Each structure stands twice: as structure tokens, then as C-alpha cells.
Length: 357
Image 1 (cartoon, one colour):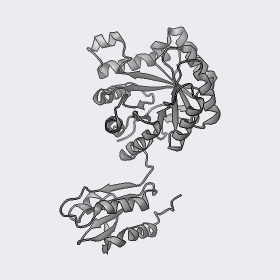
Image 2 (cartoon, one colour):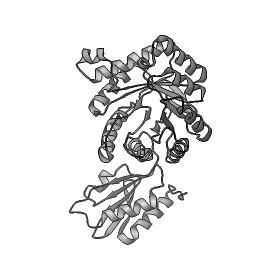
Image 3 (cartoon, one colour):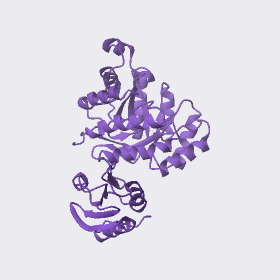
């Protein structure tokens, strides 16, 4: 699927939209008044691969946290503003890289213009953030509740507030905890404008279901070519969001940052310990970014199902392994105890090996 074409904005030095890679972001949840805790959590997020970090700004005291983060963290920082336009202006003066607002909550056109002009002067983009709890009453009445159409119209209404004051460095999000509503709303907005889109399932849920809902909602849109930055919302430490986000991007082919494994679930035809083999193979090869390895139980369907893999590890006779390069079997009937090392050597022989760092 071809990726949706959008205009590009910059959050600090990180591009969003256009031909830029899809960006992963998260949000701090350390106590707001604890500056050191916020700096520590931001460092942990950065080390885990987070590219944009957002924090809630609810009082002027939080501006000191903004300043401290800008002094200590290289990752661009985003201020999440709810209703107080003065907090948006103070965050911009403190060096924030982006703000998230819902323009109708900021105030009238004069206040929206103040914020937009300050953002324009400092090169700060604005995310118009709509969720299922922020849709205007007239739209709820018009559409009979929180529907994809209501959320999409609410988002585009917020965009128009900014366009009317000649501001166009805009990112849009339309989040819901209902993934069908979320997917449909994003598709509507994607067809109506060329602004970059921030994808996420809000209040996604607990440990397991949060991962499932985020993977389906974000993944479905990315598979359609929609989305320029993502946030996986989990009720956990924010660092836990990073591997899920990277896995989603890898799964849809949007960003390749790790080894990819094609592994069958196995069945009665499998005559070796495929689960142990997969663990051993991952332990040896998980640092090989962009290499695709098939680990298959038997030769009945294995070679065909892993046809796009670079290398294959396929069961043959009992406790014997056949190794493939692409479609071609190159080493046959290796004892399982020796097969992983043979696979590593095969990868080296074909110039795809790098030593782990």
C-alpha cells in the first residue's frame, strides 16, 4: 500500500509527514511537580527509542519542568495543553517543540490567534487533538452520538480554527478507545486533508488488551498507508510502549528495525523441537536488522510459506534440519544440535552478518 502523501512539519529537528519515517512517541506519567523524576523518565524513554516525548502542562509550575527537560533531554518535547492559552504561550517561550491543543477549549479567535502567532514565530507545530470525550454537543446531536463522522468533523473544525488565523503547521489526532470508531474516523480525515496524522487508541486498556487494541487500530491504518507518528497508550510505565510500537511498524513493513522471523506454529509433522530452535536462533540473530529468517516445522509447506525469507531453517528427517538461502536448499540433514551454528555461518557467507554491538 502506498503511503498517504502529506505536507511535512518539524518537531524540533524531527520531521513528521512527507517522506519522513513514521515517528514513535510517548508521554511522561511521572508526578508533575517532580522535575528529577520527569527527567529520569524522559531519559529512559529516549534510551528505549522514543523520538518525541509529551508531558501534561496544567499549571505555571509545570513550565519549570518544560525548561528542565529542554536543558537535559535531546528528544523534542511536546506540551499537552487543555484549556489555558497562557500555558501554551508560556510553554512556547520555554522552548517547547510542539503543543497539543483542542482549539475550541483555548478560547475565542483572539486567543487562538495569539497561540498560533507565537507558534509560527518560534517554529512550533500544533497538534489538534480530538478524542471521543471532546466531541462538541452539536455534533453529538447531529450524528446521534460519538460516531466516526462526528469525531472527524470535530477534528476538521479544530483545524479550520487554525487555518482561519493563517496557521498551517498542523498535525491531527482522532483517538477513541473503540478501535472501529478510531479507524473509520482517521480514514475520513485522511481523505479530507493532507496534514500529518498522529495515530493512537486512547485508553487502550490493560497490559494484554492494550497491546491487542493498539496493534489492530494502529496497524490497520498503517497498512492502508495512513499515519505519520504513533503512540501506543498502555497503563504501564511508558517505556513498555516502545517495543510494541516498533513491533507494529515492523509487522506492517513501515519501519524495519530488527530481524524478522517467519515461524510456523508446528503440527504433528514436526520432528524436532522448533520452539527451542527458535529461541536459539533469536538469541544468535536478533541484532540483524532487515534480515528475514524462516523457521519451519517440515518440508510439506515450509519452503513455500517462507518463500520471501532470506534464510530458512526447515525440519526434515527426525531431529534433522535443512538450511535454505531464499528458495534454494543448500545444506541438508544437519543434526539439530549443530544447525544453528551452520545457519549463522550461512548468513556470514552471504554477507548479511554483522557482529552484535
